[in-house]
Image (cartoon, rainbow, N blue to C red):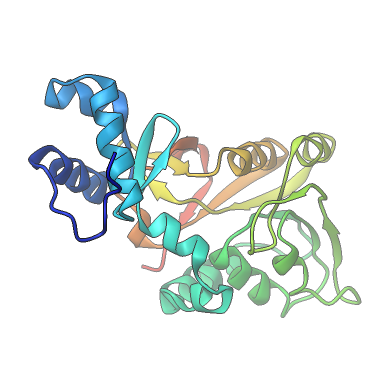
Length: 240
């Protein structure tokens, strides 16, 4: 089979698949097969071709936007600069909701890291986190910080795994600050990394209240797996 190049012309169906991914953020093979009246194997071949040409990213059972690939490849400092004003606005709003002396969980992601830097300007928090970068924002002389160990899952210093979930199940926190990849039109809060989803759910279960930190750019999109519903959060913090 001839490899597909980035500049190769697309079939009408492949173009339509790309359009669905652009609109929705994540699409399933099953839904595409039903929409186009073809077999799942036919759709899978189209997705493989589009993935090989760098136009989208393959996932188990479906496909997502190519930026999911690019985000992983970006130098970390560059990734942190993307949408920086919106992330900072979210971070400041979320930090202002946390009372003095609270025990809280900090999720992974650049928005939560920005919130960690805002929280670190105050004193007396007890912080549990699966983000090594978020942990490093705090002065151990002013805060008590626990890094929940696990498998290193990315360049962002995130940690995942069964041990992480079990440790969260054994503690009780006041707040969990959760990040996501997408919020679909039905109000489902979603992420592409299933191992991180397990940690996010465990942190929400361990906390009296969970806050979702998300820029507006993530609304109206979908991802691979569901974290929770919007209604499961005590607050949804956006830049506006």
